[in-house]
Image (cartoon, rainbow, N blue to C red; front, top):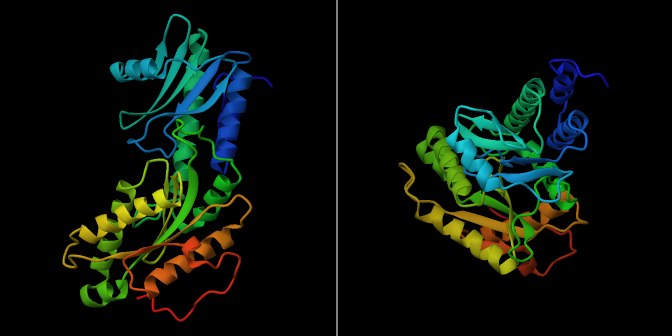
Length: 317
C-alpha cells in the first residue's frame, strides 16, 4: 500500500472503527505497516483515566520492553513536547489536559516526516478512542452505561480484553455485583427528583472512588448500578463490597443525610451467558432486599446454583 504524505487513508480507517478492540487492532496493523521489523511498545491508560498508571497495550519485535519509568519521567520533564528523541529511539507522547495518557516507544531513529505522521495517527487513534468512550457514558452519573455492559462482560469472559494482566499477586477472578439504593422511591417522593438525581450522582462517585481504576462501574438502570471487579476469592470479594456498602452508609447526602444500599454478586464463569450471570446477581440482590436490605449477598450462599426459579414477590423500594 502506498503511504500518502499525510497518512489520510490510515486516519480514515481509524475513524471507521466502531469498537475499542477493532480500533486497537487497526492501530497495531498501521504501526506494523509503517514500521516493519522495528521494535515498538505502546502504553495507554486503559480506561482513559488520569488516575491510572500506563499499561502495556502492545509489544512487537523487542526482546524486552523499554524502561517505562524513564520514558514517563522524560515525558513529564518535557511537558511541551509530544515527540521525544533519544540516541536510538523515538517516543510519541499522548496527553490530555497536560496529563500523560499514553506512550509509543519506537526502538529506532526515524526521519522527521515519518515521526510527525505517526504522531498524527496516534492522535487520531486516541481521539477516536475517546469518542467511543463518550458513547458508553451515562450523562447523569458519568459511569459506563447499560448499553455497554453486555459487551464488557463478553470481553472479560472470552479473554479479549486488551490490557496485559496486572502484576501478579496471585490469581484474581472477575466478579459481577449489582447495587440497589434502598428506599430510593422515598427519596424522590420526599425530596423531589432533583435531590434524587444528586443522590444518584454522589453514589456513583462513591463507587468510582472505591473501586480500582481497572474495574468497571456502570449505571445499570434507575437507581441500580453494576460493577465488574477482580478479587482473589469470594471472601475477598465480599469484604470489598461490604467496605463499599459501609462507605455509602456513612456518607452524608444533602437533605437526605443517610441512606443504604443492597448488593448481590456472583463470580463470572467463562462458559456462562451474560443473562445467566445477571440473573444470578439479581437473585442475590433480591434476597438481600427481602431479608433486611443494607447487606451483601453472594449468589453461592443461596444454594440454588443451576436453578432458574426467581422470587418475584419482593418489595424493592
